[in-house]
Length: 141
Image (cartoon, rainbow, N blue to C red; front, side, top):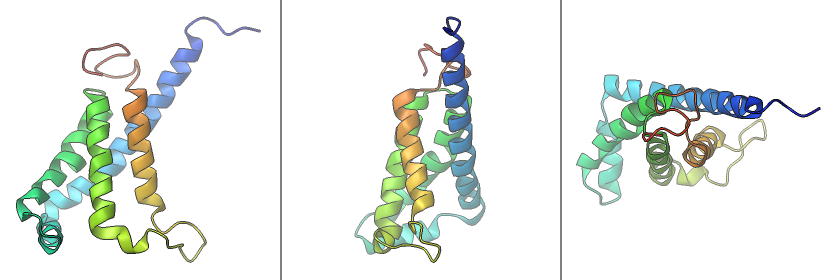
């Protein structure tokens, strides 16, 4: 039996909402920790790689502002791309030594970071969907 018109899209949009909210909230928690503890350790790592420490403040964009936009569904594709870039930088600065490492339980040592990266790329490609401030075809989605 054929699905009613629009029903499949509603399910797809509900899936986009779940993905957006999960990604946004989980990244935002990392941002809140950095709001509380500062970004001094990130500044130090950037300095070790010959980059200006002031770039560490960009983590607030990638882990506070962008997740809030993703959750709300405003400028979702751009915000998700920012999170993806943030994850690539985190992998490069902090986790390169673990790139080919397995955990004690056999999973990839960087599965959380990998999942954040993959989810942010997926949201950037999919957009926010209709259950968002921007709406399915909103100019801010």
